[in-house]
Length: 308
Image 1 (cartoon, one colour):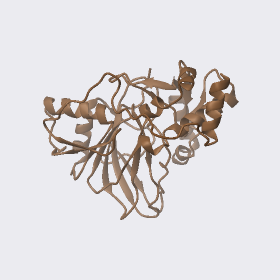
Image 2 (tube, one colour):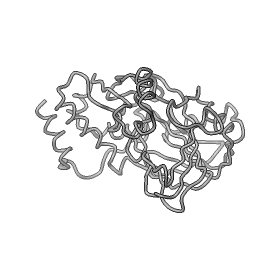
Image 3 (cartoon, one colour):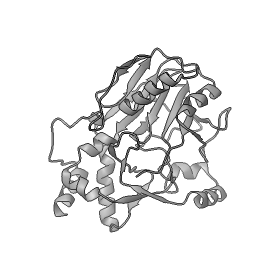
């Protein structure tokens, strides 16, 4: 235990013992990538992120095309599609290939109840510039999300993604052992951003609907079997069974793990682009560097399962 505390303290203080190449494993152990026949894949990095070329997402997916796209999502965790002109209905239909659509309880809707429209500008600055999984504070966090760029600033507004499996892989063995069986509590109420969206009455109502929920600190991907970190600084309040000081120290150390550039990819948007990410495998960070200019995106989330 003392060794674990020392490793964690070094990480928090920015004095990691290890400098040099990091273990970068794109696929879960034992899995192999196969060829793609129905589209081209252009990797954005060695770990995650690939541009899919040669598809029109407004067209329904055939079973064969869905199978290949599903495999690409599992292998690359984030898929980028350039120059897609989609209606809300087409965006929803594409996302629904992977499951039921999740309706966000707080955020404003677009033309469809199933599609959230996020409009940022001078009167509503962006606040998503923090590393996070979507909705870890519900029992069944989303499988993923499909985001479409509607209107963007002349410069800025990129989105970054981090591979939480790689972040786990590179933890010291002693820390991995310490994390086994630990569960962390997630709660939307500490977030100042959500507080600003809700009245006091709405907040009390949603606190009853969505009380704090505990999930494993290290979750296992239900499709690939890969282990990854599942804690976020904006929603994770504490680790069950630990003293407050130890919980805070360990969480601060784990929050930092996704911040290493070796685990990340950065996407520079163009109007009409669509991004599809696996919320079980990555965290994301929307840069808020374009104020006071406008940035408008439409988002469809796909219902997921309970982390284990």
